[in-house]
Length: 337
Image (cartoon, rainbow, N blue to C red; front, side):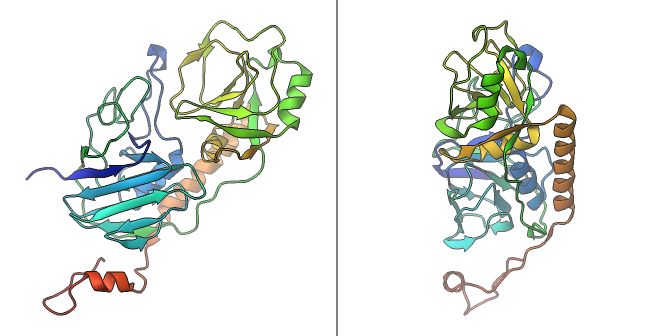
């Protein structure tokens, strides 16, 4: 019996295969990559019964159109988005049955930037250095190391039948200022520059991708110039090049850089920034490293509780579109339970 496959009928503009990322190779210049919104991937995988390390599809803006050759559960997470299965509208943040041969159509996110599509069994592309995550800059992992294109066919892992699920409560992130830990080169910036960073509004620039997000606002000037001996660049590092324009390093960041880093965005807030649309206003506040660790641990506990409390999705009344799509006259009509 041949393995199940997922066909990309129409690709979104920047859709890639992503799992939790490629760890343990920073010393060799290979960054983690992985999802821009890890919680969206974790929740999507849980909704379709996948292991936490399963790979899904991450998309930017419109999600595209897909078709499987075997019945599979799917879930779309990340934000509010129009989803259709065989023309019938279904909800995000829930799992649904995608029958073999029918189309899944995922529109553009309305309140977020990055979305995730999970398919039961996971996207089963060959692992590279222990992960299926796509790193676009180096062409590593995923499907041929690149963003998906119309006509691509992706292998799916084995999947067992299971219930359709939804979250016990909506998944929402905190509002308010984004939280920073000063450093590692905070001492290269004057108090005046720090006052600008913490006292002014910044906006999310259109200059953004999986590697970094640039922010527009008052220029940040280093005391003795903007060239330093290259050192490590953790996720969330805020690099300040000679232009004075802060650049926040994201999932596909380089592993070392020669610009001073005034601060590092708390890990719990990095997906918040990733999901802000272009033009959104950003303000910052500083916290301690210990406080940032506590916030991240609390967020992980909250996610575990949500995934442990998944409930069976209510079927709801059938729509007229659905009734017209099934045979109500002869034979027996199979339900979606």
